[in-house]
Length: 401
Ligand code: SF4
Image (tube, rainbow, N blue to C red):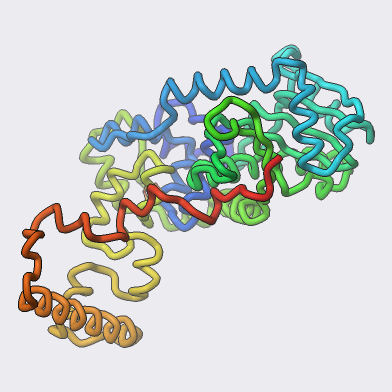
């Protein structure tokens, strides 16, 4: 064991390292600037257990209903031995859908040699069209080889490889839930990277694996499958950067106290004190991607960063909500570098005061609308805006077949 491995084992405590999968690797990219997360994930800490131990249990994950719906849709799409899937994928990537392709289910392979068999078949596949179901892939994460058991199909068509992901969220009028498309894109990027590394290790050109992944989802509210292309180039860059950062874990550990522990069997107060010694960068996105989100959100209360990246960037250099209010009221002078943010805040405060003065002095102002929760019903922007995703990551229009 190297000294780094010993250090990570000490951080993790007397429990086996939690193994990564494509979902957890994808989640690593959610907040690449967070040292706390990088250290905990590199050490294989059981973060759900840790969060529960310190009184902030995680509350996310796929419901059992969603898992069984996903399994049923996947079984339906593959039920005819992949014929319909081949047609959909071939049309989408511009290959001849009539050209016969072989179908190999690697899930049926002996589990002890499934990875070797996947590697052998994928790296020796000729140019003939071929689909491989459930190939076992692998990636190096923080010095550990992680095996990925995707429920995907790797398709070799028209001379290129495509990752095919089957998801059960619907595509309605060419649009899908942007958050779900984004999650599928980053997860698919994990597989693209793993497949590229597999081919590169065998002396093939890794660029043979297309960055356009094929997403197969139910169309509208029927169970009719529809294929869409999703470009994961950006996700590949973020993923590569975060994996490289975790590979340089020594540099991160240098800034972590020697006695830092995340052993879920330690006393909660000791764990909280230890966690606070490692820098975190909480953002609302953490709620969907990291088991420690409720703890970090509580810790970041009053910090502008906790309001999200756009707010943090707009207020560049103003760290706390108290400072924001003081600058807006003009009760504290701006520090060097805060002049622009301070001017904007003062202007916003002035506009708000004018608007409030006008609405309270105008005829019939708020006559129908007493103060309180009901007032929000008049405001178009806000949380309700998320209910109407339009263009963006979720827009699959024009790319579906
Ligand atoms: S929840 Fe906390 S530890 Fe996890 S990524 Fe966010 S800030 Fe980092």
